[in-house]
Length: 333
Image (cartoon, rainbow, N blue to C red):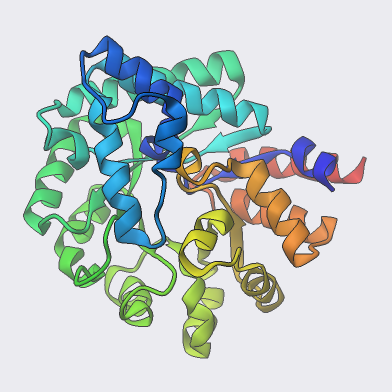
């Protein structure tokens, strides 16, 4: 199974570029940018990854990205991830980035997008990885700030396929950003939102994503299984869910393998993703392998999860079919 997973062509639809910042890279960027760290070695950084819920994770996460300053820094951040994706046989990616986490530190939007876009172009030419970028808004910041950054993004619309919503969900429901997402939709962006596992009023958040925001897919969304009406709505709309098993284990002490199997049984287009792999110490293959071991998934299950990712990717139908053909060819050999 491990070899099968490693060789299988894959898409990744839920990975935060800032969450791929490895400890060794943190140190090299800090040295280059003359930034003093609170840690002496990369091993001390990893030892500090003591998080048990979303807020405790975010505290460490935002502190680490302070080393990202220049366009070259953002280029390296993204390209290092693409190199790791290549090793996992990922052939298509829709990575997230969080511009507010950087503009709030005085970094220009053009610096961020310039570095990431250059890495995407190089990854397609040198590594054979196609990617489309998703800009996320930080939900614990104001809707006005989100709208401001949406406007900042418009000159770069050719480089951004959609918008998302992440960060701390407590007291920050989708409704707060309804106007922002309506404007984003009018500008031609695809829409997604995080509905992380076991957050306060999570079923209400999922319902708002469906009825108020009219999202194109949902990130996480595991709790939908608690409401048959939500499940029926998600299935009827053919909405995909981007599940992150190892990430879930830090929050609910489970890879949610039973829940993912139930999703497959009920016809939900569940997909497997790595979320913030440098922090959870697990990239996409690691997530698939751990899930297969815990949940006794069959090869057919694993292929279905991979096919779902291509099915719900924001791709032209011809490109989607090309990727699905590659997956089918792999599965038939």
